[in-house]
Each structure stands twice: as C-alpha cells, then as structure tokens.
Image (cartoon, rainbow, N blue to C red; front, side, top):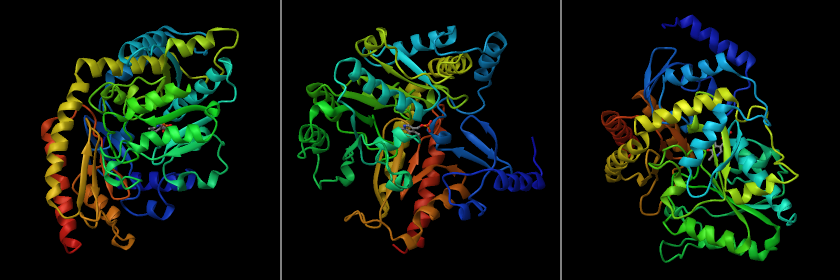
Length: 454
Ligand SMILES: Cc1ncc(COP(=O)(O)O)c(C=O)c1O
C-alpha cells in the first residue's frame, strides 16, 4: 500500500498529540531520524511510510525470530478465534496445554512445568514470585533477596527494576525499588570490573555471588537471576565454567537459579535456549519475545517438577495474569515454533551467526573497533576511541548518533547501547543479507574513521 506524504504528516501530528512516547527524548523525536512510522514487514526487511526499506538488523526488539510477514501465524490465531477465545487461568485450554507440552520437550533438563503470562517483564515477575513462594512453602520464608548482575536488563515492572542492573537512569526516578536486589559484575571480560583477565581471574564475577550470600545470611537469599548471555550488557558469552560455577553456588546455599531467556530463547544464540551452551540447567527459565516472534504477546516461566510440586498442595501458585496461556496466543506460539522447526531456524542461526561474526571480525582492522563478540545471531561491535587503552569517545564526538545515522542512510537498523552496535537480525536471514550487513558496517566504520581524523 502506498502512503501519501500528508498521511505521514497526519500520523506524526496525531502521535505527538495523543501518545506518551517512551525511550527517545522528546526533542530527538522531532528530528527526521527520530520518528519513523513502519508500514510493512517482509522477511528480514521493514519499510517505512516514506517507502524506504531497511534490513531489520534488530528483529524489532530482538523478538523477530521467524521474520516478518508470516501470515500462517495469523491464520492459526484466526482459526483459534473462530473456535474459542475464552480463557481463565484455572481452566487450561487445549492450545495452552499443547504449548506447555512442546516447551517441556524443547527446554533443557527437567524443566517441564510452565506458568504462562504475557511479556518478558511478567515472565521475570513470574519467576521471582515463583522462587519466593517456593521458599515460603518449603518452610524458609526468610528468603527474599535476589542477586542480579550490573548491566542486566530484566523489564519494566517494579520487581524487574529491583533486580536488574542496567543503566541506573532507567530506574533512578522510581526509587525506592523493592528492597530485594543485590548486584554482582557481569562476565564482561573485555572490560572486567575487577581489572582481571580470564582465565587467571578464576571467575571472580561468579565467585562474588558466594561472597554476597555468605556475607549476609544465606537463609535470606531467594534467587540469582541473569540472562544466559546478556544482550543489554553488550553480548558477552560467559566463559564455559561460568554458569556451572553459579549453579553450584546456588545449590550449596539452597538459592534458586533463574535464567532469563527472554531475548536468548527460541534459537537466537544457535541453540533453543542460551543456557544450553553451558553445562547448567536453571531452576526456573523465563521466556517471551521469540516464542511468538512478536505476532502476539506471550511469555512464561518453566520450572522443574521439584519446584512445581510445592504448588500442588493446598496453596496454588499465587500468580494468575488473566491472559496467561490464552488460547489465541498459544495457537500463535505453536505456529511460530512449527516454522522454527520446519525451516531449521535454530541451525540457521548458528550458521548465519558464524558468518556474521567472521565477517564482522574483519572490522578489527580499524583503529576504533575494540572488540567483536557474538553467539548465534546476536553480535556486538564495541567501538572505542583507543584500541590499546579501550578509552571511550568524548560525548561531543557524537559517535553513537553518527553511527546510527550512517547505518540508517545505508539501509540497516540495529540497536545501540553507548558505542556498542548490537545486531540481532531475524533467524531466517540468508547469506547474501548477512554479507550486506557486514558490507554496510564496514562502510560505516571506514567513513567514521576518516571523519574522526584517525
Ligand atoms: C533479557 C530481558 N528480559 C526481560 C525483558 C522484558 O521484556 P518485555 O519488554 O517483553 O516486558 C527484556 C526486554 O527487552 C529483556 O531483554
């Protein structure tokens, strides 16, 4: 469908009049790049109202596993709507039972019992509440503290804000948060919080968790939470021993391990879930985004029979979002998972991810590319002012804005966190499009190097 210029203007005007638009500063929204209206998605591409097409290198907000324009997901939901939409958490419906059964098959280890909700934030809340109530029902009501990691993002709700460590400014206006959070360092080896190097560090970032637990009373700790591989903390796949170490610390003190797979689930890292790269099965795994590729909200937490058993007595799990496990989103999720399986998108993520990472490593020839990291189709380019010292750019150099303007001019969308460029395209991407992304990034960095006078 073609849109006229004045339609774009009308939408823009009405949006400013009637929406509270988050994320971007109001002034920036009024610049040409600051406000885009997407009108069409197809495969790995998005088109805006002015007719410009981009490679969706961020898969929306990392949820687009199966890519855009999958009408069969819509068809499955439409068929379900024609059949039944009634939902109430205490009456399981057939699609939600089928979805839980499928998830039990896909999830690692003994994670076979699902509690559904509607988003990543709710999935994290579900996991936090499940851990807390498990301890209460297990006779240890004093356990309430949760150890998160600096740099981790877990969602928008108060519970999520209280355990995440991403960007203080995301929650500083909402203090006090729930007094349960404690924080340790990320396994971010390129910029280790302790100035140590792997492997001689003997993973102090993991050992710190034990220090926290023993310094305070171990019986006050409910859970440790972390993304299997953190996107918000610039895609640092932890060393192989990291998660097994965290797992054994949790076991030693009866603390539950929650792994947040909201971004890393459903093939993003080249396996169904990110924790499957490690010899570690969490007690609770939370998921959302990729389960429906963004076609409809759906999320949840999956746990072991041992934990779920506690909710099979006289006190059921006290968490029941009205739309959790509704038949329409469950039907959409099942259709999405069928596409992932039929088109081998998890394998494609591993294969194309390697091609992307290998291609991006070519950028290390430039003096401002400090590090290239990735796993599956989740990659990060870390830009630095000085490769040796890893110094950051000066704010007045406007590097982030310049990089993003250049990428968009060349038809590529990605996420930026500071001067880290994060690439997470849909998992159905092909080799020619991977090569296009690499070529665009090469041109972006080469222009920037010249402009900055290196
Ligand atoms: C790791 C992680 N957990 C949780 C969330 C929250 O998900 P949602 O935005 O669906 O509430 C996000 C969102 O980006 C996320 O990246």
